[in-house]
Length: 254
Image (cartoon, rainbow, N blue to C red; front, side, top):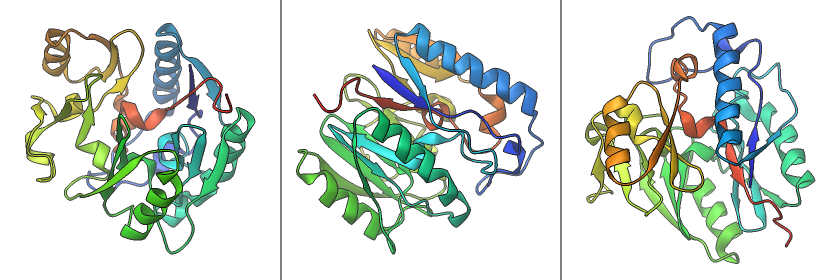
């Protein structure tokens, strides 16, 4: 399996913040945390693929927002923040190079990959400050032939849908109750906000941030193996473990 990543820009500290107060970002620490994140992916059996650097794009490290993949298709997004649209071309080339068919979200649609939660063949798409109904409509049409079902979810109080909820390997939705959209009436409540945000790896391994030890304990109690990473510098920019990678199939053209 492969995971798409992108190195942090030297202007990372200028990244957009919406729902949090701006804090200084330690670029050297962020770079070390990114390297450790990549090592954690590789240690869990993932081969990492780097998108070309985008040093003039402060938020480019949050590569998840630039592309959504399912089956053999990669849909390059159209971020709701115009300043982020310069991140797209390098990501489009990276996924094309590993064999994906590439399509795009077109104006007036907007879509951030952080608003797309995949659970089996279902894609929950957050309608947020970054993703609009037209973007979700286009995504539904693009993935319909691949057998995906797109369901729109209204999002408030957080940047993206996956700033509030993600899912465990068994398909259980997990969330931090004060932030979970009312759409999800049945979910596993996590005691820390960041504990609701996980990346599924292999063999029951689940990546989780270092600042949510009680949530990691709950995940372990459900039979999974937490892989803990410190991403504190990226959290200052509303980032989470999901934002920093996109999981790819090894041979999408097979």
